[in-house]
Amino acid sequence: MKKLIILLITASLFVACTNKKKSDGEANASMIEASQNGSLKKEQSTPHVLIVNYNLKEMSIEEHAELGANVAPNFTPEKIEGLIGKSFIGNTNTGVYGGVYQFSSKEAAEKYITSEFWLGIEAHPNLVNFTKEVYAVPPFSNKSNGIWANRKTSSNPADAMGMHLLVVKYNLKEMTLDQHYQLGVDVSPNFTSKKIEGFIGKSFIGNTDTGVFGGVYHFKSKEAVDTYLNSEFWEGIENHPNLVNFTKEIYGIAPISAISNGIPML
Image (cartoon, rainbow, N blue to C red; front, side, top):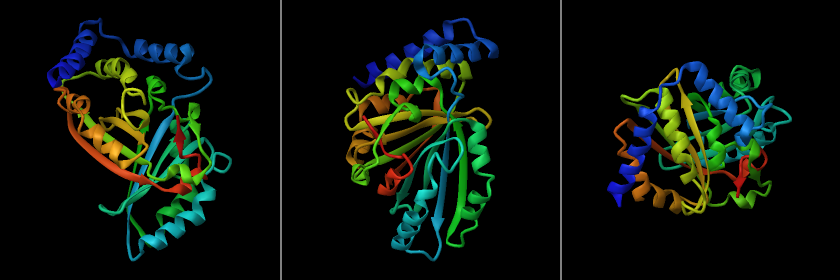
């Protein structure tokens, strides 16, 4: 079965490689065409994901939770231009906390991380070792419930109980951007709740400047994440010869995410 999965993924890549290589203009045109065919609303620009991580310094987990509850009402689309939603995340085992945001555009994400509001957060004496990464979200993420503007969401904090977020990152090896894009188009229909137990949605992500690609997944539980990462389907992806240097990070999602439109539902 494992060999079959790897063979199917490799076959998809082979088809992409044998097609005539698209120019940058043609690649952009295909994204626009996908948007007009319903993957995204025509008037939308490309959504972008912002992943923020940090550690705590001289602050307990309880104090951090209280801080989150106090600031959460500031993270709404009404108060932050271009914000679609934010999932507050944390992993008490690794000591890494932060948030995964989706913005309507790259410009909105960059404006946020240069705003006085953000700079005030980054200057907090008990929040240290910040990292900020911005990624584009391709239109075919709509097939995997990964376009947050098109998602059903919950305003009930109880719906976040047990929910976990998985961030996967990797680099490309001997694969062009167009070939990788086509691979994403080919495999995206496999990321559905009917095919993956406990799956809610996946935003395919990529940053061509840093050469980092991957996905941001929401799952109903930690057990569902573990089952996925131990599946033959995932093993086939991780063993793809052109996808290398994988990292996998798992986080719980705080109930306060309900305030910031950060709890996706099916």
